[in-house]
Image (tube, rainbow over all chains, first blue to last red; front, side, top):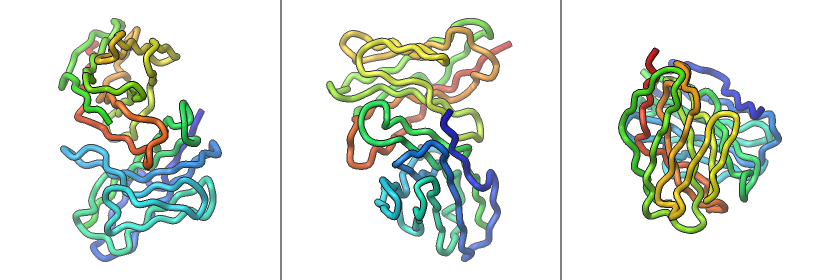
Length: 115
Length: 112
């Protein structure tokens, strides 16, 4: 079974704090993704990565950065948290590109509240 | 990626089959139909996907019409734990981002 884990289920941070969200997958997947999910807006892609040390911007990268130093780990960083970054953050991974390998598997999510 | 249309909500009795419809009339020939579900406050869970043939796995069956303009997800024996929002997604493979676009989905309420 594919397992994607996220470091925290719930986080409360203050405005201006630097926030790290960690995601780990144990299936040697090449692709990893960070989404945020908000009511009425659905799932929005923040960043994704096809390989170690590679990253690509998604639809809403502003205010976020990512790091992928190891294949199994993809970190999302909020450099200076703001209240509009209060959201559910979802990490996903997929094996590779093409066919069934593109199926994305999600972690349990991190619900972040910025005060 | 093509747009999908799903009913907002459905009820199903526990132990009965749940049939969740999805319309994707603008689907193109190389787009796959994916189904995910999301139980409250959890991450989305992959269920099944297919291109044009019907598919079955341990969770569900996917029936795609011959013209591929609609599909039905079937949970053969629904349980209370199947209560969730079910998302039907149509997408290409090999795209630049491979991002998933979730619509509003169908809230399936399994009743005891």
